[in-house]
Image (cartoon, rainbow, N blue to C red; front, top):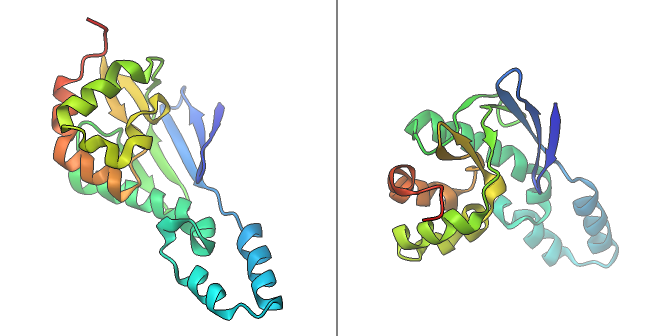
Length: 175
């Protein structure tokens, strides 16, 4: 078993079982600490603003729930699309943990496929450059690239529009 830590989730890799398990990271300390200070200083507007911000903004609710939301979105997106560019997510317990198919870790440099993504999307991949320019967000299966981290709505939008082209056209060798 190996452990990989991301910003919003911890991933337990079980190659012999053929699965990975994704657990959300719920950071409680920051929102409690900053809320306490806002209350002590009488900053009710900033307290209300920060607690009502969308989860994706990674302010108070995001610190706590973003990992759960990404797990849940990932599960439902795969369930709805069954997209072949995505590494299959088999199960989710309401986002509290996901079970995803194991894939060989991508040992290629993103320098090989990132320029191809840019060309295929006509630069639109920059809307979510973090996910598509990082080789750690991919795995290899049968000499094809598969996306393993697709819980973001921006990522899902790009996959819906260009995922099939990525799957079919991306070459994994330098020519």
